[in-house]
Length: 426
Image 1 (cartoon, rainbow, N blue to C red):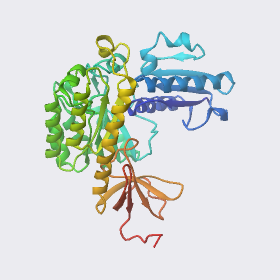
Image 2 (image 1 turned 90 degrees about the vertical axis):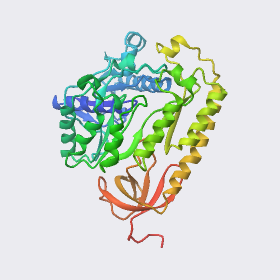
Image 3 (image 1 turned 135 degrees about the vertical axis):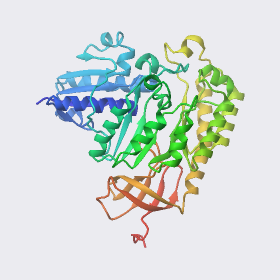
Image 4 (image 1 turned 60 degrees about the vertical axis):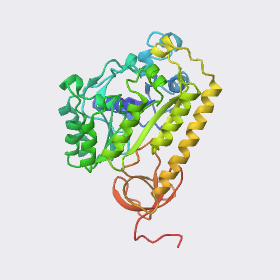
């Protein structure tokens, strides 16, 4: 039986593609080797690398993974190296001559199968509801790589979610390049709210979390469904990218700074207690000091519970690379990034400290080596947000919900206790 290892680079959308591929390989009789297994162990016959080609750092990580697999092949530890995904789709003519040791190059692959081999803990899974993107943001190469937006039929998504629930999944994380666009191509209107309601009706699914929303045309019925249905986490991952009109226009985002601020206010009004995660870009062409100060003011006003940032990276073939000059010095980008993240650090700390003394229902993700339960509430998403750490003598709680009381906080993580449980340090 051939032993195959699938290595996934990049985002959670890539992870879902790999999980579907692994199910196909399993059905064909191959033995799947966990990604954590070192190639030097000699326990892998073939490596398949699912690459990312979004920004320069991600491209370099994918290239390094390919080169590592090629070295293992040259050392006789691996028989075959195959590559697919965004990087090989984007550079399908340039890469093969540069790395001829790779046996098989493929572009983006999709799989017509509901079944998956989960690479997440068995109690949560990502549900990809669409492929591609119809947006034309100046900095983004995804439409070139993945093509136009294509929604997955609702009945197929519900069927997949039911299969996941039957396997023990309790939390669904809904993802796409733009989840708010869901349904326009199939049904002639945005159907994300309807989809969320149908997913929430599935027995066994307890939490549904929304990632990768887009501000322009955000469907308000999603906010109503979120406010009314306790299964849908009051959590929205919505990359806003900037707040200054000049930069937003040059980014081709389709919204103004005022519309962006109004949307954030509407979300907070319609979904009391909603947690907002956003991503911002500093150093995009057109961002002068005044525009950057507008961005800092925006963050001070909105006080996002979660925030990440990138420095602008010019990507060949994008609108920005063709039409703009990347003329903001690297040291200025770094200085602005540092100022932004220092501001956010204080906001994040204040938010976490405000939760001390409150109670929360949490999902136990894992147990650390020293016996600490690593948990999340509805306001923390796996892999990108902080964690709630709980001391407990119980070791069999992974995948279960428990009630805790928050007792401490830092910028990223929270400390909590199980009410009524005797503390070991008392």
